[in-house]
Image (cartoon, rainbow, N blue to C red; front, side, top):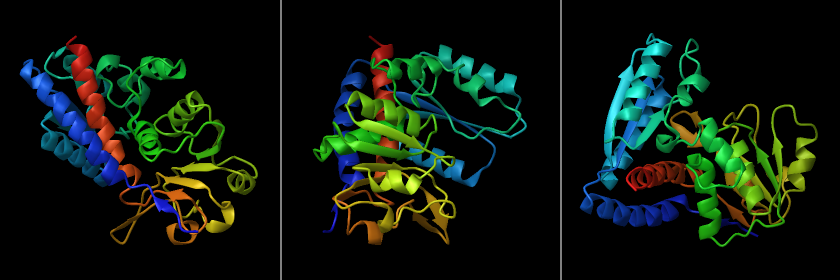
Length: 284
C-alpha cells in the first residue's frame, strides 16, 4: 500500500477561487474586506507567519493594516489599540499574532477583540459557540483540516480518532468539530499514558506537536489503512518537516498530508475565508 496524498495546495486554490467571487460581490456593494494584523516583538517565525498572511490577503484583494510594536509595549497600550480597531468600521478582521511577551496577558488581549472580528476564533464567545455547534468564526487550522477531509470524501463518522495536541488553536476546537461529525475522539498530550497503543488503534491521526526531538510518528505506531493529518512544523537547516516520518508511514496509511503542502496552505486560506465571512456578516 502507498497512501494517497491529501494535497492542501489544490484545495486551498479551489477555496480561494470561491473567495474571489465573494470578495467581488462585497466590493460591488462598496465593502472592501480588511484584515488587521498585530505583531509584538521580532520573533522570526511570527514575522514570517504575519508576512505570509498579509501577502496572501493582498493577492486575493483583501486590504491589510499592519501594526508592529517593540516588545516593551504595555498591555494597556495593546488593549487600547484593539479597542480602536474594534470601532473601525473599515476593519473586519483582527489577528493578534502569538506568542505575546510574558508581561502581556494573552487571554485578556484576545478577549478584548470583538468576537465578530475574531478571525482566529479564539475569543471565549466564539469558542463557546463552537462547543454548542452554532455557526461562528472557527480557528483556522481545524477548519482547514475539515475542508481537506470533505474535499477528498473522507467520512469521519464512527472513526476512532486520535489528536496529539490539546491547544486552543488546534486540538480542542478540532475535537469539537470532529465530534459534531460523529467521530470518536481522543486528545493526547505529553502526560498521556500508552500513547503508542492509542495511536496504533486509531483510524485517523492528527498530530500537531512541532517538536521532532520529543515526538515523531513512525510506521511502527500506526495500523494499516490509517489516515494521517500532519500539522507539525519543524525547521532544521532551512528545511521544513512535520511530525510524521512521511517515507515510512506513507506505506501503511491510506491517506496522508505532506509537509509542506498539506495543512499549511489551508490554515492561511481559512484565515482569509474567516475575514471575508466577517466582512459579510458585519455589513448585513
